[in-house]
Length: 74
Image 1 (cartoon, rainbow, N blue to C red):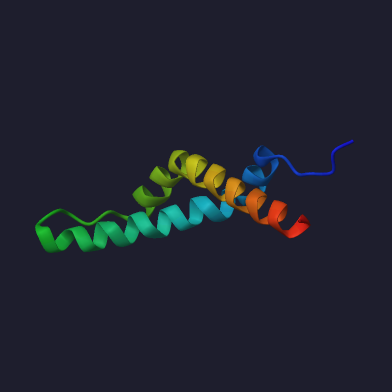
Image 2 (tube, rainbow, N blue to C red; image 1 turned 90 degrees about the vertical axis):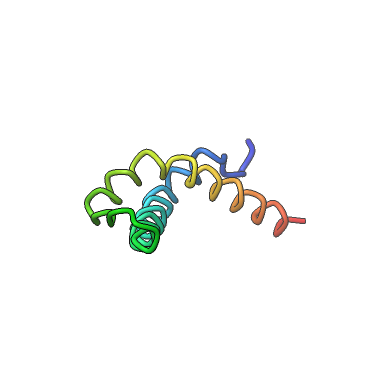
């Protein structure tokens, strides 16, 4: 049996952190967008948008961690 963690399990574990990072970045982008005339993004809207956008971020984080684990076993 292969003892390697699959990417999808890593992505599930990292989803909360990835979605949180996406929410913070969206909120900061909303604050920066005020400089060019847009309205600010509320924290609630940033969190709501980070729920679906956290999925690809978590998958990318899972791929990165899988790569690091593979390098560590060599």
